[in-house]
Structure formats: C-alpha cells, structure tokens
Image 1 (cartoon, rainbow, N blue to C red):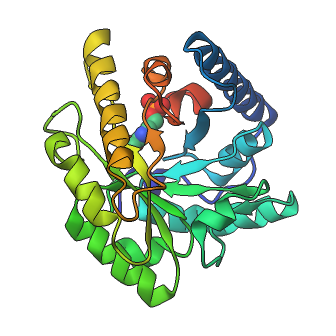
Image 2: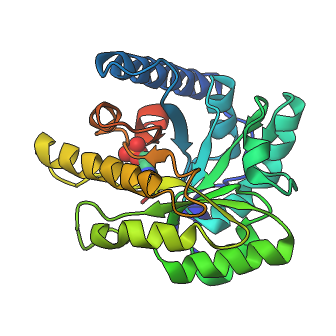
Length: 276
Ligand SMILES: *Cc1c(COP(=O)(O)O)cnc(C)c1O
C-alpha cells in the first residue's frame, strides 16, 4: 500500500464548489487546447480523445471532471481502481453513464456506445493483480511484453471476456521508463495480436523527459511509424491497432502534431499532485 493512500480517502464523493469549478475550468481549457492543436495540425476535430489521468484523485474530483465533459478515465494502480470503481460506477449510473466494462463480455463493443466511459489502466500491472482489475477496466495500456500479454490473455479467456490492450513502447530509451524496446515493437505487437481474449488496440508511450522539442517529437513520430508498420503488415489480429496514446500535460500539443489519438492528462485538469 502506497503512503499517499493513507492520507487521502480516495472513495470520498463530496468536494466543495471551489474545487469543482477549478476542475471544470481545467477540463474546458484542455478540451480547447486539444481542439486548437488538432486544427493547427490539420487534423479533424474530435480525432484526439482526452483521457483524464486520475491517480491520487478521489471519486468526487473524478466525477467533477466527468460532469465537465471527460469521457475516458485512466488509473495507474490496481488498488486505486478498487478503491474508487464502485462509487464511480454508482454515480455514473445516476447520470445514465456506464463506467468501464461493467460486466460486459466485449470491452470494445461496450466502449463504442456513446454513454460508456472507457476505463483504462495506464500504469504498470503486476501479474497477480490482473484478475482484480479485469472486472472494471476495458483496456490495459501498459502491456510491455509478451509475458504479461500471455497472462492477461489467459485470465481474459478464463473470464470469457475480451480485453483491449495497448503495447507500451519506451521510445525515449530512458531507464526509468517502462515499455518495450522500440526495435522489438512490431514483432511483439504481431505476436500479442494473435492471443485469444485480447484485442490489440494500439500503442502507448510516455514522452521523453527532456526540454528539447525535436527529441520529444522524434519519439512520438517513431511511435506513429511503428503503428503504421504494424497496420501495413496486415498480420492476423493487427487490424484494430489504430490508437496512439501519447501526450501528457506538458507535451500534449507536440503529441497531437505527431498523430496522437489519446492524450492522457492529469495536472492540467486537476492541478499539481500532492503525492507521487
Ligand atoms: C500521471 C500520468 C499521466 C498524466 O500526467 P500529467 O503530467 O499529470 O498530465 C499520463 N500518463 C501516465 C502513464 C501517467 O502516470
């Protein structure tokens, strides 16, 4: 159990007006920034989806973001998923919305309906936590190798469900980052695409932790080229590998310029994190 979870009641549902206004303004600002970046890059309006990265935020804060227009949620840690999911589901249901897979056998089909809020896992997943998150999250973005993919596949088959996965690629090569070697990504994606119970939906990366724009953009561009190579291969099961989950608060615009389809944003919506 991580220390910050002892400080904060993640299941809390009540936040004050000031805080909810702050979050609403944050969501609107980010949605405007996305629209501007799409237009600046000559991309269609709505081609980039906003995922709210909700680690350390409580249920009340996340619901404020949903009320302001957020339609995709990403958590980093299985224990945070478990602490918040039931409250979030109940409050979503009150609004006519469904969070995550909610018992649906086919995550992708559920996510395609307008009143479903896709629920993604975006942080590292230990094999022994897979079964805990599968009843809630429809897509796991942090699949960094064949071993984890095989384990998720086995669990999905045992549960009789289909789980969306993104292959996480360590484009920056920074040692602190998870993700597979970029040179192995096409081959790995092709192998993962053949596994039962999985649907390979695309690729994910965390941007280079540098100040240099060309370096950041080159990493994002390489992820796009990798995705295009996977699609062009027409290998079995790769036909849904369309998503590029890249871009966070500080590098979102560069990621959109390089073809991002999902930006994962926390700080620009909720403010700076108190912990981690
Ligand atoms: C926290 C987090 C984000 C969002 O980062 P911000 O800088 O707060 O926008 C995106 N992706 C992952 C994997 C994260 O853990």
